[in-house]
Each structure stands twice: as C-alpha cells, then as structure tokens.
Image 1 (cartoon, rainbow, N blue to C red):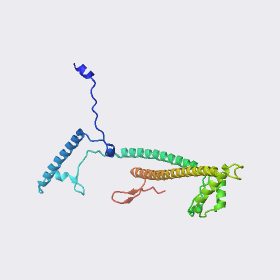
Image 2 (cartoon, one colour):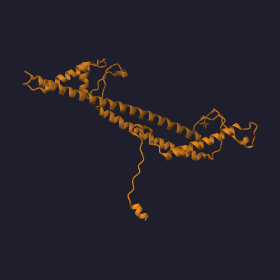
Image 3 (cartoon, one colour):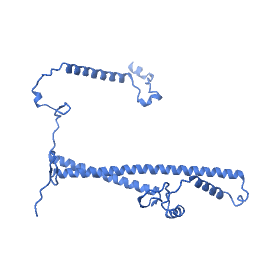
Image 4 (cartoon, rainbow, N blue to C red):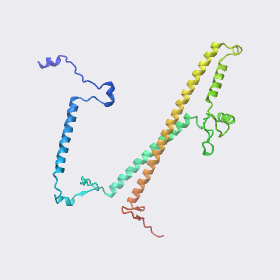
Length: 276
C-alpha cells in the first residue's frame, strides 16, 4: 500500500523567493530561520540578565585565594592561560626560515608579474615611446602627444617644437582630417563639380570615422590608466615584501646572535668581535 502511495505524483511545494526589489537584502528569511534567530536572541538575553544580576549582587569585600594567582590587563580584563605551549628557539628559527622562503617566492612571482605588465604596456604604446614636452624630467607641456615611431616624433617636433606648450586645438585637427577624407574619397571627375548629396554622404562617413577614432583613443587611454594603476600597486607590493624579507632576516640574525640590536629594556647591544 505504501508503494502505491509513493507511486502517485504529488504536488511540488515551492518556497516563495525574495522579491526583485529586495534582492540586495539576500535570501528571503523563512519561518525556520526566524525560529533559530529568535532562539539565539532569547538565549543571549537570558545570559545577559544573569550577568547583570551577578554584577548587581556582587560583594566588593569578597576574597578568594585564586585572586592571588590570577592576573588582569590594564583594562581590568582577566588574563587566563589558554594552554598555549611556547616553542623552542630552534623551532622558531625553522619557522622563520620557512617564512623567509615563502616571502622570497611571493617576491619572485610579483616581480615576474610586474615585468610582464611593463612589457605589455610598452608593446601597447608602440614599443620605444617618446613623449614630447618631458625633457629633463620637467612636465612643462599642457598637452602631450605620443608618437608611434621616430619619424612621426621628428615631424611633430618640427611642427610644434620640443618642450613647447601645445594648445588643445582638436577641432582644427578634426576639420583637417575630415577635409582630407572627403578629398581622398572623391574621384578626379568629381573634384570639378562635386555632387552635394555625395558631399553630405562623405561628410557623414567622415563624422563616423572620427567617432570611431575617438572611441578607440578613449578605450586605449582607459586601458593605459588601468595598467598604470596595476603597475603602481605591484611596485608598492614588491617594495613592502622586500622590506618584510629584510626585517625577517634581521630577526633571524638576532636570534642566532650574529648581529646586535635592542633588547626589551631598550638597551642597545652588539656582538663582541675578536681583535685581530
């Protein structure tokens, strides 16, 4: 009989999901979740009530011999032994050696990642990129032009001059590009008497080409900014890891009494070397 009851298809009872406008609050709380939360809240409430009663009924003259051996910190909190066992000097040296090896491995990985990103950045910017207006480490120009190769850089230097301030006349540049595009697109027969509709079509094509060029330049600029931020973060991480490695090496040297240092009392000491 039970097998027949299980053979009958039953209705699937689905739970209601969180509404779309409340998805940021996470999964919708069900009754069993509320029960657990309420149970935990009431237990904590009872515990706090018992502690308040103990604090209110505390005898200030109460004494116990365990108070002689117990310790408290500067905030009045009791310091209790957690059962931690102090390691030997050799075990700590071994652990610090393993830490130093791990830090060296991370430094090598970070350095390789940084070098790879630097190479990608140089390749994306045309290899040996030179910037006009940055001579002698001084940022004097208000507009920077990146040249794709040496010939283009020389031509730009001849037009604008090295290290001079270049005004941002992008409109004039775009107009000249548009004129050149229309002039090259029209045939030799059309140059004498150009058709107005054909001129409008070529003008629209030139506008579309300029929009695409602006979008490509914007994407390239954004990518360069992202790579620069990642490169700076990798350099900072590498610098911090190198400083950590040096600090760890100094600690290991102090533990082996191969160099001097400052003890807990603030007294400087050093290794006495044999006179030669």
